[in-house]
Length: 102
Image 1 (cartoon, helix red, strand yellow):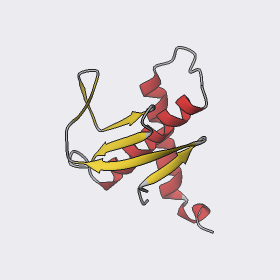
Image 2 (cartoon, helix red, strand yellow):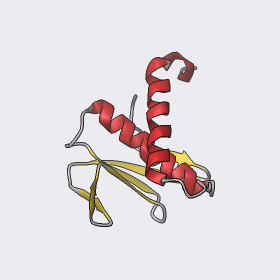
Image 3 (tube, helix red, strand yellow):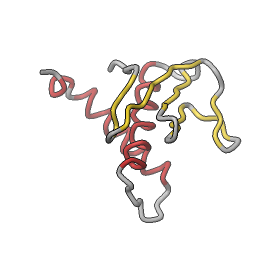
Image 4 (spheres, helix red, strand yellow):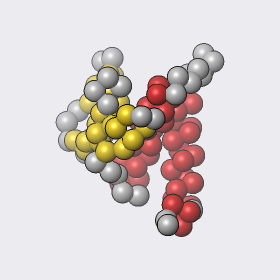
């Protein structure tokens, strides 16, 4: 999977950055962070391998989809739900690469 420089989610273009800096959100170290106001996704590429980076990318994309579409996760743990969707998407893409080619 190639991580693009930008991705459109809903009507917004998100800039994707791979970084070697430590990412923190609410005093917690993260592998990736999405900023909904600045429309950016930043991924730490020093703490994980290529597959981890791909999964983190999808995890942050799912967060952005949830936000852009105003999904209500009905009080569920957002991180758990988003992580499970991201893992499922990653497996789908890896197991079926031909369905994404024209």
